[in-house]
Amino acid sequence: MQHTLPPRLTLRGISKQYPGCLANDDIHLDIAAAEIHALLGENGAGKSTLMKVIYGLVKPDQGEILWDGLPIEVKDPAHARQLGIGMVFQHFSLFETLTVTENIALALGNEAGELNALAEKIRAVSEKYGMAINPDREIHTLSVGERQRVEIVRCLVQDIQLLILDEPTSVLTPQEVDTLFITLRQLANEGCSILFISHKLNEVKALCHKATVLRAGQVSGECIPADEDTTSMARLMVGDDTPISTTYPKRQGSTPLLKIIDLNRASPDPFGVDLKHINLTVNAGEIVGIAGVAGNGQEELLASLSGELPCQDERTITFAQTPMGTQPPDQRRQWGLAFVPEERLGRGAVPEMSLTENALLTGFLTGMVSKGMVAWQKAETFADNIIAQYKVKTAGRQAQADSLSGGNLQKFIIGREIMQNPRILIAAHPTWGVDIGAATAIHKALIQLRDQGAAILVVSEDIDELFLISDRIGAICDGALSPIKPTPESSIEQLGRMMAGDFSPSNSNERVNS
Image 1 (cartoon, rainbow, N blue to C red):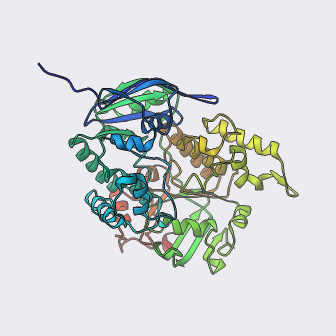
Image 2 (image 1 turned 180 degrees about the vertical axis):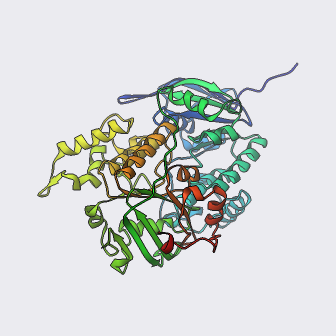
């Protein structure tokens, strides 16, 4: 007589209510042993809340969880790890001033053992899975992509039976994604179940055995990704009324608005990357895209442009021939610069502040402050307009920034900057963690801003996105910038070689082609 093993994880009737929002509504889900199961849905559909229920961070109001067929109550994350559940968060849960080893030791608790032995294990595991990381580095010295590696390695050093991945590839290069997928398939072959959340439907199709779709907190459908195409899966997520893809005509930029002339900078971070002879021009009415593997100077370049790290020579950076290299961030914003940082919480938004207060943080130059007094009604109207125009799912403008899902917070930050009608926009990872419908809306907003005459610089590790929206494109590697070429004259293969530092001598340098 043949016996069928119960699912590794079973959810029955899970519901969770927050003030003004029913995040999960009677959700049923089965995940088998050795199965890679995708969870799909728009931003705010309830995916992250459901993951937190499984991981013991949130207590459901109703419903039952079964682990290997037996009912359990996951008391907290430590209990989840004891059961064999590991989770990689979309927003990093790392202590900035501690090392990689110390952060992972905190996650392991009493199982961490001696730190030197743990460091060697981290080194071995990270190298084995192609995500090499120095266990002695402090977190604040790591790029966003490197911090993501720490989150993943933190789970891989544990004996896990269910791995939850919330947007794990958001800041990984295509090569890193391929390596991660090899790792995940190996884990599944060894019997580990994987719950995979991603808005990148081509990844879901390539990796996952099954998919469950959430909409407005409910299960709205299921599918086998291999039997679907990305368009049909997108329609399951967003319905038939939301635009999900488009193409954009390329534009020839006109007058130079942003110019970098021979920028050299020694990184103040001992683990950072020095910038070497950066030359770049971004013209009015164009989008320039910069690709690169995380930790190759993007952070230093963005800080130089935003004013967080002023240059020694004011002529190094000019806005419409106005020297700006030594000016602080507020002076650059007064001129017309808008900036979307790579880290949403902490830099793009203050977690404990309301959306109105976060709108005021960078929008104060648009008439919201007069003689030192805040015009709160204008700030509230501005926040309401962002929420409405960018379809930010939130309880309202009074909601704290950290109460939003990652994708909805990203939409709010992008909207806040674009709606100030900047002359120059610098955006890092503009659609990180947003669903396909929201990504299309953000791309359209960027194109509209470009067509109004703004100069836009996009720094991203999403190559497909860069080819879609960029008029000219290049790559940064080890602090050096490749030639910037018209996007139609470039290919993904060429860009990949430039990301690895192969700058073809046949290409003209930036000073010539700009």
